Image (cartoon, rainbow, N blue to C red; front, top):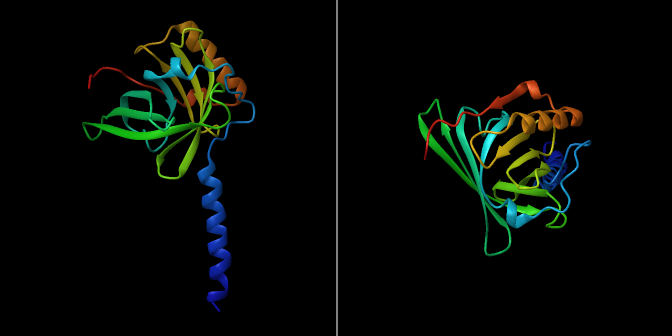
Length: 180
């Protein structure tokens, strides 16, 4: 009797894995930046704020560094200081553009074939400050090339995030008080 359930379960699991590995989603009201300049986005960014989730829980001094891989994908090097474990953590991943490389809609993977949406939804003309949406309203980041962000940019990003549907009162404001 049990064997008749194995095939449907395996098919369902396969479909679930295939769908989750596609990644590249974006919240309904969010729009990725167009005329995105990949070359200007590369380099080091400081995480100013985020909606917390298990992979970054208890991390401060978080940075992300983006560089080009030989195959055209983008290397993602995330670092942060785990305040509970009292040690630095690092995750290396890769990002690919979902559509064209001049649209700020990417998918990022830190775990083999599984990708998540990474969408640049606001960026200033100097590429110093960025607002990034994940694939759902559970994931959002405010990034800066410096350890701080001007209040005017912060206010603009928070309004945009709220208009999309993010609960900005849940943001974790990241401390930058250590060097790696």
